[in-house]
Amino acid sequence: MTGDVLSTPNMAVSIGGGIVLKNPVMTASGTFGYGEEFSSHIDLSRLGGIVVKGLSLRPRAGNRPPRIMETSAGMLNAIGLENVGVEAFIAEKMKFLRTLGTAIVANIFGDTPKEYGSVAERLNDVEGVTALEVNISCPNVKTGGVDLGADPVMAGKVTRIVRKATDLPIIVKLTPNVTDIGVVARSVEEAGADALSLINTLKGMSVDIESRRPHLGNITGGLSGPAVKPVALRMVWEAVRAVSIPVIGIGGIMNHEDALEFLITGASAVQVGTANFINPAATIDIIEGMERWLENRGIADVNQIVGTLDLS
Ligand SMILES: Cc1cc2nc3c(=O)[nH]c(=O)nc-3n(C[C@H](O)[C@H](O)[C@H](O)COP(=O)(O)O)c2cc1C
Image 1 (cartoon, protein in one colour):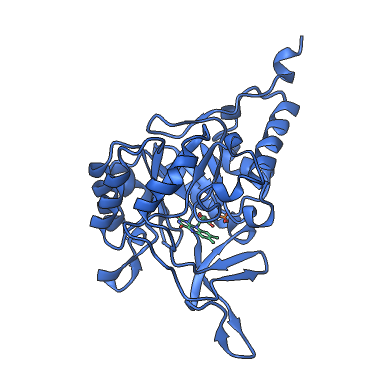
Image 2 (cartoon, rainbow, N blue to C red):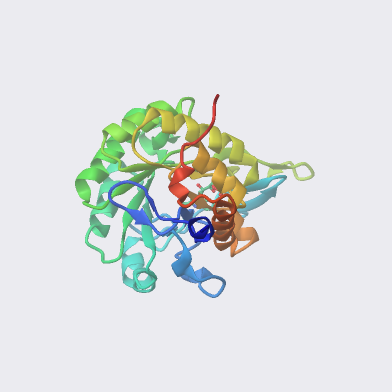
């Protein structure tokens, strides 16, 4: 019989550190709030995982407006990492998140490497937190504001500090604003990361020609959406070849075809960001589209797709 071919494919994937997701589709940090905001739009329990808005030790107000600007194939944002702070997250947001039966990934950042360690330590024993995602695309005040993640030594240092501070699996989220992603990826792997995720936003800018002012209050911002997908895919490809830990692909994923490109290139899972602003059900559509795509080709397990890029 063709029973095997017609049955629903296995969608579960491992992303390192013992984490198993029910499917490879997660939400990207900063584009999905703390999950609850989307609960009236979609069944959150169907997601592979929810990555929450970046958390710092203390609450942050973020940058002055305007903070978002649409571009021809994406958007620029300069939110400035506004968030409720780790204490309010634990006290108010986790109550809901831990009931969902999906992986909950706490995205964290700090103003100093030490602060990353403090946030990681605070989250260590919190019931329902599956893993930490460490956002190293943050300015290093000591070196004149160059992102921590643009310096392989600093990237390794932050990872080591977080590693010491927690028993939770650590996903380190890389910035694309570097010349050689492989060097940063290796440094972070050596420092104890369980997985990598990439890319964060690409630094960009936009100008109002009448006022001759930058559109964003912060002058520069981070570019995301379809415009960045080819860059993201190329960087995932480079990272996959540089390390042996799992890589999670992010950047401009709008539909299941985009997501499959990342899996074929070697990503073990994906995160969906800007698409959530256009269609709050984008993640569910991607999961269902991917399932149908596999089913139609008689592929019984999504893992059979991962890393199958044909270079012959
Ligand atoms: C409005 C907005 C806020 C974001 N906030 C965060 C954040 O707090 N932490 C983080 O690591 N990435 C943040 N990101 C980056 C996304 O998680 C993602 O890496 C990036 O947008 C690329 O994916 P996309 O093209 O699917 O949006 C943010 C992106 C956007 C658009």
